[in-house]
Image (cartoon, rainbow, N blue to C red):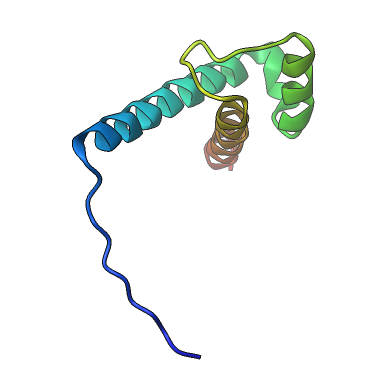
Length: 92
């Protein structure tokens, strides 16, 4: 098998701005879900972010940061994994 190397061009300013805005919105959404899991009543759901996701879909949740559904779902899963790993380290 042969490796093909391709040069990548930097995105133009509009694409760069939109990528930057998407990254910032994702970070804010993840911060929202981490604060959600910090609540004592929600910590029991850390092992099952899919059930939280399903509950939010039933409640017709929309990201207040303008993310698409697949992006806020990824942020939710990422926040649950991040917070769960943090709790394991703290209580180890």
